[in-house]
Structures are given as C-alpha cells and as structure tokens.
Amino acid sequence: MVSVSRRQFLKLSAAGLSASSLAILGFSPNQVLAEVRQYKLARATETRNTCPYCSVGCGILMYSLGDKAKNSPAEIIHIEGDPDHPVNRGTLCPKGAGLLDFVHSPNRLKYPEYRAPGSDKFVRISWDDAFGKIARLMKNDRDKNFIAKNADGATVNRWLSTGFLAASASSNETGYLTHKVVRSLGLLAFDNQARV
Ligand code: SF4
Image (cartoon, rainbow, N blue to C red; front, side):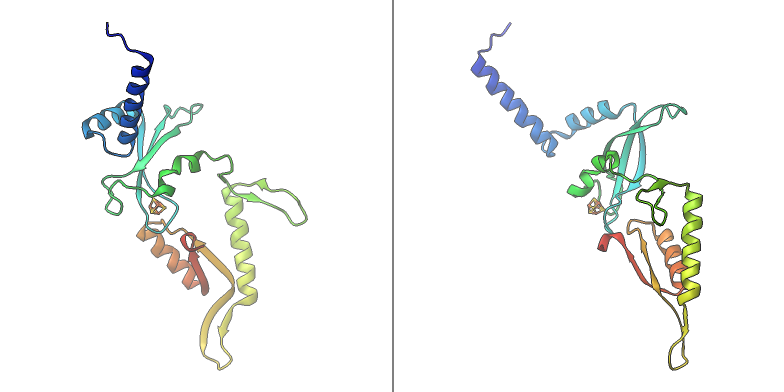
C-alpha cells in the first residue's frame, strides 16, 4: 500500500481537480469524456429541440429520466448542444448552456393565466379559453380600427392598433405560416422576442 502524506494528498487532489476542470472545458481526451457522458445519460431519453432564446436557433439535445407512466412524469436532467445541428455543431453560448436552469426555474410560466378586469391576481385558464379570449379581443379591435383606405382613397388594408410578437426560434415552416396569418390580417407591428 502506498503511503501519502497530507501535503502529497492535497497536491494530488489539486492535480485531479484541475484535470477534471480541464475536462469540463473540453481539453480532456475525447474517449474519457465520452465514457463519462455515456454513463451519466445511459438511461435517459434524448429529445431534439431548438434553443428558445435568440434567432441563431441553435439545436439542442435534452435528456430526461422517467418511464413516462401517468404518475411518473419525465424530468429533464441535462441539456447540451446538438453536434449534428448545422447551425451550432454542438456548441452553445452561455445563455444556451444555462438552459437547464431556465427549464427548472420556479418562475417559468407553463400555462396561460388571466387577470380579470379589477382583479389583483392571475388565474390559470385552459389553452382553449386563452385562444378564444385572444381571438375575441383581436376581432373586436380589428373591427373597430381597421383602415381599408387612406385619405386619398387608395386601398391600404392596415390594422395599426395591435402588434404581434412571434418566436425567433420557430422553424421555417412555422415562420412562414405566422407571417402569412399576421400580414393577411393587415398587422404592421410584427416582431420576434430576440429583438425585444
Ligand atoms: S445557444 Fe445562444 S446563440 Fe444559440 S440560439 Fe441559444 S441564445 Fe442564441
């Protein structure tokens, strides 16, 4: 058995710590890193998604545990860049690298909420109720404020009293459909969350 003094032990610990820190930064032998990752994620379900933060639209891999039974919801335990994604090739900026905290934040809004006129609190409502309310309010406002012709009698079909905020990380197809809906309603104020 090898005897190690306290000083030697601290030196060894420091060396091990710096080695593992370097591993985190990507300087470790790939094979070792791959083995550690495989061990950690062996039982996890891998799901592809897109980082929701900005219009770069980096691809991510989300790993969750849970057998998907009704009383056992899956929990996301790890998120990393998708090495097969053509935009980011596995990399993530600091915001994307912190996505796990975003997912598990106690302040994250997970369902629609409504605050009635005069009320001081929000209450949870269903998605159907939320869609119904939004459609009703949009229709009322458009009926009231739509401008079909300008002062010279030229057709303009503008709706200037409502704006629309979309998601910058949507797919091309979703972006195309969103654009078609918004512009066909006559909305001019149209942007996405990456520029807010
Ligand atoms: S990881 Fe960073 S650069 Fe990529 S989409 Fe998210 S916020 Fe944008």
